[in-house]
Length: 73
Image 1 (spheres, rainbow, N blue to C red):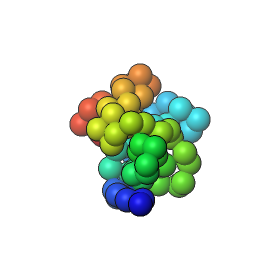
Image 2: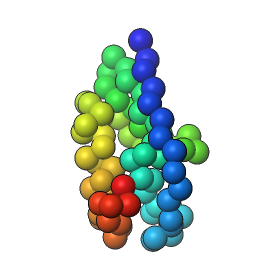
Image 3: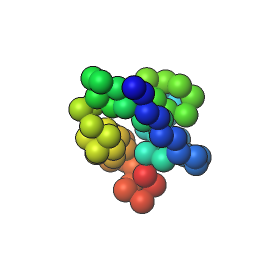
Image 4: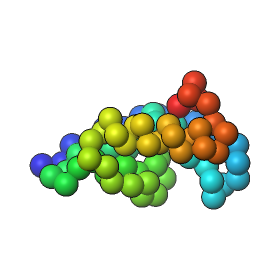
């Protein structure tokens, strides 16, 4: 069974389009038998993780790596 959760918001591009990391609230999380699959609001695949909590933490780390801030996420 698949379960999806969605968020809505806009993000600013801080480090160029190819390095842009969406805010957690902009991502779509799909629960599968294999873990959590994450896509951004445009449908771009961001990764597959064991749980949604791990996925959220990885998105936050990616944002910090490119100069983002926790409050933007």
